Length: 135
Image: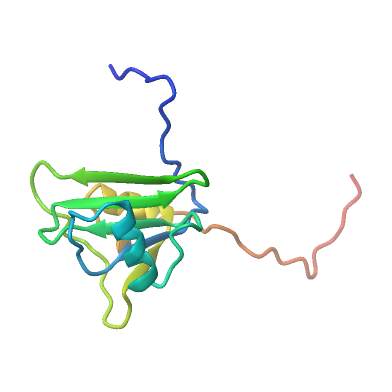
């Protein structure tokens, strides 16, 4: 069974978290500084704003996550034991694709994020015509 390491933390992925996926693969020798530069130059995004950035290796067998938590950067990597990340977002005119948290979870587990379904984040309540009833 997994033991909890004192002082260990995890990256929290909430439904409200902004997730940006780089469309093109990157050189996986890049670390935090190199990926942060890519966030600014290629993705036109601030790596310090709490967005989770997702990068794919050229062979599509690994991904890296970069996120700033207010104190420092997290850099995590997942390399598949076999197979590839087959369903990667694509775009002819953009360097990145925004995903919702549930779509990112599907991508992380090798699924197709475009087919992931979840309840809407919010919905507008129609208050016109609604009667107020005394309690």
